[in-house]
Length: 581
Image (cartoon, rainbow, N blue to C red; front, side, top):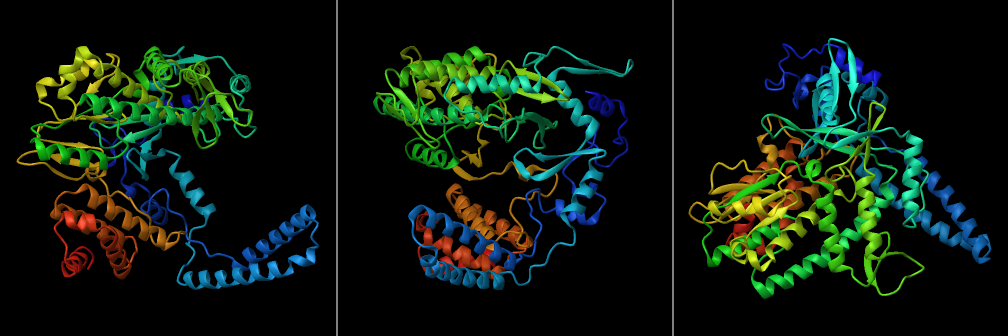
């Protein structure tokens, strides 16, 4: 904690800075001009995921490949008893193909120059920035760095854990915790041993490389006013990760089972008892189908601002236990690395669990969620574990079960019918009923969850990546929260990075497909497509490359062209020229 105390007691340089946020009083900005070194500023301008271009040593690659091939031949000869000299033709043919591929890629590499900054130099420059600032990825735009006053960033995490700094006494007061976290007196070694014992209960062998306790991170929400933070506890080699991955596979199976069950209920009753959606395309298709038979009068979105930190454990356990009891019953759930499936008997070849064991696993995941900050370990005692592999699915299934239990109750039939055209993606809800009916939402969900809406117009809202309007008729177009950011957002890769150009071009084609699926009107599609094309050109891609990808998009997606009433080839070509050239 001494390092935390030093940061909080040291005055920051935010006062008078042009990058100071007025509301929080400290530097928090996505403007790369805050970086003084011009070369480092240029790198940040290409996004956090940008890879420095590097010349490939093809001779070294060939030598290493040949050496590895020789080892493989020796291994195969020992296993099969075939003489090594009998593999000569195989080796010769393999190296011939390898040499041809190397010559091909060497021609593709022409014109690529290594960046003038070395990795070591970049690290030194970033270390200088870290003297006063923290660099964090922006929420909803993870490829973009946000520069935050180090003192302010640390103070926000301290507030999250209930840690107070007394400026007068110059002391750091580490409380026992707050409503969400509780400080524990475990050492790192004791917690690792504790988690290994938990995993042994479920036949999961402890891994030596999984020995890290998750650290807490704060992601700035620049699309919020005032700016807020999303707190994430994560570690790529967390002590409890293998168990969380195991539970994730089980919950995926339960989600599919619940969706199929709810679809059958909907077919029989006409009530939508399953609101969860995985993407915006389902919402677009559903709203278009509804609008053909009845004119949508209102649209509104709500979101849970405290889902991951305020949902009580007993609510999570009650609903997930209900789900397990309803879907598992007298069977076992077999779990492999990639899938789950039911079985009436225990199998010795795979992990398998009863309903009781699955419920115990869920309870252990909730109760064994820890994070470390400043050398102190805190246990999350409320809410969905932040940063866990299974956490998003836990949150989604809890809400899905709450919705199912309420909407399928015969006593709520009249209210449920009004909400048959409602959808939810994680903690965001889209409803299309009259505003005076929305009180049911507050009745259906637990009072511990804060349900909010930022809509000011009942005829227009944004949900997922959709902009939905019902003024005269239903109109859906693409929406991106990063459009409202105060700085230029980097969304796609640059052509000069250490990445094959084809990856960037395929990204362009994929984005065209997404725009075409989401935009109902041709003018909206053209506006988005032209903006996308200009962005890709600014990032180094050529007109003819993009034009070729646009033609592929048209050829492969006749349905989208028909939607825009574009059937004849000359009109398709004109669209490509207008959007690219």
